[in-house]
Image (cartoon, rainbow, N blue to C red; front, top):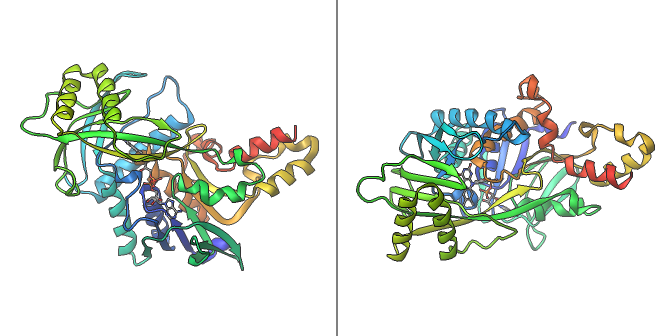
Length: 389
Ligand SMILES: Cc1cc2nc3c(=O)[nH]c(=O)nc-3n(C[C@H](O)[C@H](O)[C@H](O)COP(=O)(O)OP(=O)(O)OC[C@H]3O[C@@H](n4cnc5c(N)ncnc54)[C@H](O)[C@@H]3O)c2cc1C
């Protein structure tokens, strides 16, 4: 039997990526067990108090900007269907000051609202079980199943199919499977800090702006967790490549102020005054990015088998298509959503769930080449070709 025929999966990670996987699989009749190291959902990067859903504008189209164009429309549809306005998101427009400047439609979103909505949808279909405080240290394959093991080697979960949606946590889980060439799994942590404060009185008469960071002059959310005021303004976010330290730092607030100064000097002065009065709050977490900044979505490659296949193909190795790279049975991933989790999580999860369920690709015909761009085997495939050249 094909491993996916049982329609039973273990999903690792309860952020935007994992929750979207739960919903998109459950809609297709899969039974899902979701495991996360945290005590509840959306405790990683998806705990962001407020983020921006907007097009990724580049001088000319790139795989990421094309993927984002598909993702923005899809994510907006999910918000409209599942999350009441004012309780997790609000529509807006953003002034883009970078490439292709202009005003774009956008939405301000608290990602945890989407996470909880997708988990509630999967639960409502009777197809989701959750396991919290369940940190997975290792994945092992035996008896046609994947076994998720804790630090002591105890079993935390098992299923014929696993979807690794644990952001940078995917690196530790998968690196053993890439031991023949660690460069074939180029996932990187990118820490970031958002600066925010209670909005008292009337908002500054400004629109959201994106340039080197995003300025949100006003966001209201009656279900923001009690740690945050229900009306905030925010400026984010910093980029610390390689860092996993989630301590909120005043230097990072100052970097946000410096970025804001280039867009709105008055707002930057306000940010600095709030910092001086001790009224500024911060939130820091870790994004996960790939080397080429495009997500890694799909079946995980069987790297030793791929190297062997390239070697035995000899001078014809350049003709082995990426799509034919051997894969580990029943092991999939959705990771490296970078700074675009709101835009990409649901689209990527839905594409993957369709493929896992034996359905045609959800990509429009003109965009089918994008499958190569986000294939998790792309780095292993390129590296195997180089090594054997
Ligand atoms: C400061 C900042 C600002 C941002 N602003 C925006 C924005 O404006 N717009 C936007 O679209 N995106 C933004 N992002 C990015 C967005 O937050 C991420 O792309 C998105 O949350 C990633 O979702 P995820 O599910 O992949 O990861 P996460 O939400 O990090 O979820 C991963 C989960 O996996 C779990 N996990 C990890 N390892 C293990 C393990 N071994 N076993 C079990 N569980 C494990 C973690 O506990 C976590 O719950 C921002 C991020 C940051 C840090």
